[in-house]
Image (cartoon, rainbow, N blue to C red; front, side, top):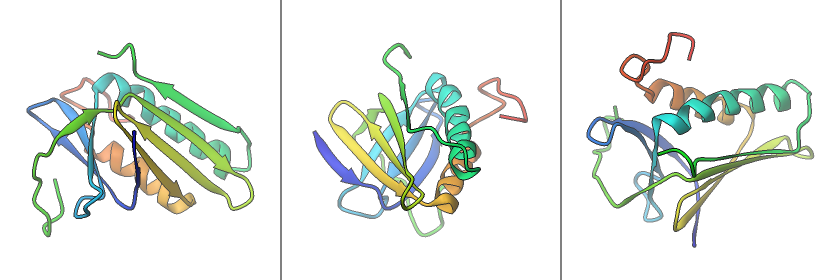
Length: 144
């Protein structure tokens, strides 16, 4: 399994696939494209928000994981080029109490992407995912 250190995350709605394409390290040689299904994003976003609230509001939970086994606009400087993508299969979150950082693992069939976030970056990551989700066409409300 390839392990990729995440430096940047670029979520984009892919109309053809009807999924969120999460591009890791967009302009880097260690780029990875992970596809997130509607069913997984509906589980994942509330989990990320809950994890954020618990850890950055002084509540403690050691780790969380979510599995999708049963789930069947880009910046002006970059152009989206479709490369080989993989379905995101599971997400693991853990929190380091010593340095108050969140470790995010995104796992597909052949790749594992690891990202480390402080409070501000983790909050930005959640907002990026929410903004890239097609709320109306997926039947999700304003509050999602």
